[in-house]
Length: 280
Image 1 (spheres, rainbow, N blue to C red):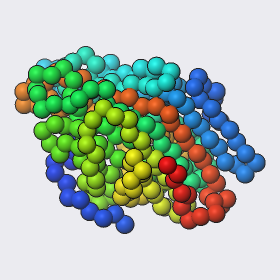
Image 2: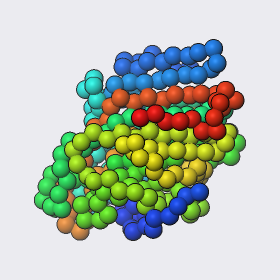
Image 3: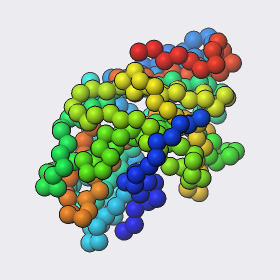
Image 4: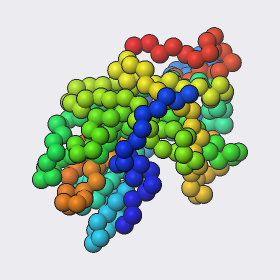
């Protein structure tokens, strides 16, 4: 089975460049002010949706990757994403996301973030039962009724111990289909890390902080499959991809933990600065 072009870009070297009505849920708090500002937050990812991403592979003889190969477990104070849960010779992509269908989503400045960690150490050992390809996240808004583009930003932490271990990439429009571009580095470990992201749709401006350090991003608009709907929907995403199993036929699961997420919506016409300041 072939691997999507998006995944091939993850595994190939890239050149670093300079880049110019929600329902009540457990562990979810929402507030609104007269100005239209909204805040959503939670300790874990309870109530989020779990989907299958496009970075998928199955060796000949293996059944295709499905939702049975991914899961997200909630522990109250954090959630754990898992990929390749059945230890098959596959690569599985778990996307766990919070989505709001809202026609006004493009009128807001979205400021969001969460903490994440790896619960195990990664080693270049093809006999281990736990290993990783990547940990990812992003904030996007799908314009299904007009341009049919998905606008936003994303980051990727490369975790394959044999290839660009620890490289941080961000999603760019340098290729018409979108591509990952190397922009920074984060030493793989088991400590908690924090990402904060801003997407200002009216001004097409972005920002991303990783452990308080600015990481270069680009406002992107990417095409999606024809079956995507006609709604306007904003999504905050957490993602993991289990390790590409070839050539040795590894049967390795990937796990990562996420907690303390926040998502602030501010009407762009009420913002007093060109881009909101992210506070550590």
